[in-house]
Amino acid sequence: MKAAVMRSGASQLQIEDLKQENPRPGEVLIRTGAAGLCASDIHIIHGTAQLPLPCVLGHEGAGTVEAIGEGVRNVKPGDRCVLSFVSNCGHCRMCRSGHPHLCDVNALSGAKQFDGTTRLVDQSGGEVFQMSKLGVFSEYQVVPAQACYPMPDDVPMEVAALIGCSVTTGVGSVINAPKVKPGMTVVVIGAGGVGINAIQGARLMNASQIIAVDIAEHKLEFATRFGATDIIDSTTTSPEEAILELTNGGADLALDTFGSIETTQQAIGSLRKNGVAIVVGLAALGDKANIDLVDIVRMQKTLTGAYYGLASPHETFRTMIDLYLKGDLLIDEIIERRYNLEEINEGFEALERGENGRGVIVFD
View 1 (cartoon, rainbow, N blue to C red):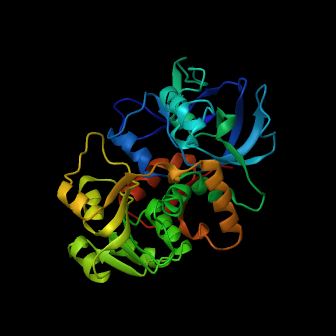
View 2 (cartoon, one colour):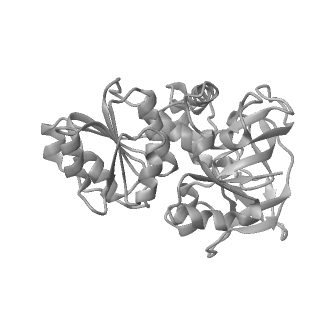
């Protein structure tokens, strides 16, 4: 099968023929239908995040079950599934306490399957890892059964792929956030794929004001299609000052969906008293923000992180699919570009240029 592989020292993904092993007990063989291009993959390509190499990248995807291993009961061949990039073990402290998206065993096993081995072999006989136990930039993938969430036939594969990461991460970070209530004022810093969905999350929660902040005017205009009521170009004005003025004292909720020292500090600085800032986007390894500790205490502000929508991915998948089928959640409209697997580097170049919406790899 063909897959896009990241190798040490390479600046682009390489399309290679790999050997795919059969699923073992508790595993599922997926024929990939669609895969989204996400900034988290770019972090790996640029070395600002780390995975063992060589590795098939891609963590935002959907596909069809081709075969199942021994003991699999949640899916069967022919099922169409959204894929979760966190496969929870169900037994660790995080899973038992209701936070399966923070599964300890999943984190420790990383780009290998739960038994500590790999399922891909290259032409020289070397092992190849899978990002998030998935590696959706491939025609097929063996994944843990826990990654698979069966979906109705009327959910397109491209839509399901985005539900697998950017939709769930963006919308979930708002609807599952602490202190969320109707009528709140919300700031979203970064109008990329996750940011657009955070804006939709604020709209779904009936926010009275949704302020989008970005450095690209065209992305800000794009954000208004999904619910942004105000836009701020941070290249021409101070976001904090503009937000404090627009909201008459600061926002109730501010989300950094980009992930950097500067944008996190902007999120905190844009809050009113008792406001909440949530860091959603992944910064580069080693980045540390300079926080005004007196401001945090006297203004009683909260700073927190949000991983994968703050809740069980499968539960959020269920909500996202329901909202999409009712017409309350716009996902088709986010997809601006479609590529085949051989065009994947072109797709990432468009993402790095800051083009609107999401690019998607579509498989036959």
